[in-house]
Amino acid sequence: MNHADILQTLDMIDHQNLDIRTITMGISLRDCAHPDPSQCAQRIYEKITRCARDLVATGEAIEREYGIPIVNKRISVTPISEVAAACDSEDYVPFALAMEKAARECGVNFIGGFSALVHKGMTISDQRLISSIPQALAETDIVCSSVNVATTRAGINMDAVALMGRVIKQAAAKSGMACAKLVVFANAVEDNPFMAGAFHGVGEGECVINVGVSGPGVVQHALEAVRGAPFDVVAETIKKTAFRITRMGQLVAQEASRRLKVPFGVVDLSLAPTPALGDSVARILEEIGLETCGTHGTTAALAMLNDAVKKGGVMASNHVGGLSGAFIPVSEDEGMIAAAASGVLTLDKLEAMTCVCSVGLDMIAVPGSTTAETISAIIADEAAIGMVNNKTTAVRIIPVEGKDVGQSVEFGGLLGSAPIMPVHPESPAAFIARGGRIPAPLHSLRN
Image 1 (cartoon, helix red, strand yellow):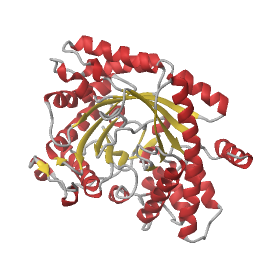
Image 2: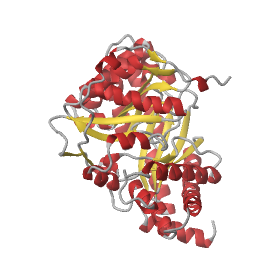
Image 3: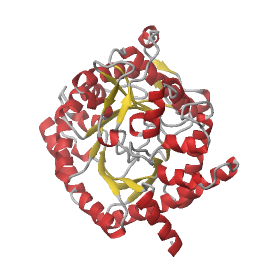
Image 4: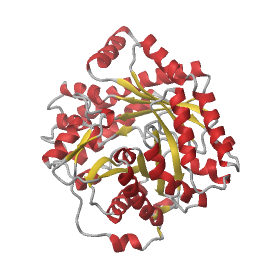
């Protein structure tokens, strides 16, 4: 980087909310399997604390030395349904408690991987883990859970989709925050550093460092300089900005990898918003020319943003991975909150937007009276978008007990707040009750 680039990066950090959103250490727990559940839980605890004992201190040292904010230090682990499969136990909550204990000892913000991959079917272990999710998330504060119910190659496991609707309702009844730590995926990636969906994939190595970079405020600031310019100029501006952001992420990732003596995995360049002013994806879309995020044209603007971010990131690093694009979590984005509260941004419009952005329906608050079948149908719609378009989609939805449309819920911190959004009252129960699998699309047959 030359002198001008350094000064520009410092300005982004000081005035435009540029940060490293997370350094996430992925840890394989496959060697922790044991028939005795207590022994397995102890092995999980010992492996995590051994591998990640220096993660937080290293992140803080890099932050001080380089002057780059590193907001979160996190851990992702092998899906627990695979680690615990050898155990003769119906209850997987002790494994979540072992994850929580280890994560707290290491000082990280979150740990992900209380997960199962069930896109083609459910093993006995998968079923046990999924049935344990509500209690596990209620009894822990920083453990995150995810379930992959569909892929482009396998289709959609509608039995799992139906089950997850019921699990989300059960989790909401136990704790409102539980649902904020639970994601249902289609085409989940193995190297995602962002929570709540991070897990250490089976194709990953023993231990790896993945870094998530974010900078919606930086992109918005850059676009203010090209107001009224053609879309070609807008796209190029976003691409160049994404390049600079990713280079910073690459620097931090490689330095963390060197100091921890752990291989560098990927940089995930995702525009992940926060409730803070000047850190909003919605405001980027409005800067492009929309009066309010959610109006006609929003999907097109988001498609261009997402594509330009990916192109800029790929030019800046050989190892761009994870999700890399633009996130649209309603409760975590100040502009999205305002647009949803005004009624312009609806659940149906958000679903359309997920066709072209990084993930899916994220941090959506719905009435507590929303049925399990309706939640399952929302998951099925998102899974279909992911399956047909060969992309990652997800649902993180919170049915808020005792609240209805017109009210709001406060999650606090980076999770923000959200207006309760309406769902369609017509029932999809007969559709969900069919069960089985929705077949993979024709274009999945690529061999």
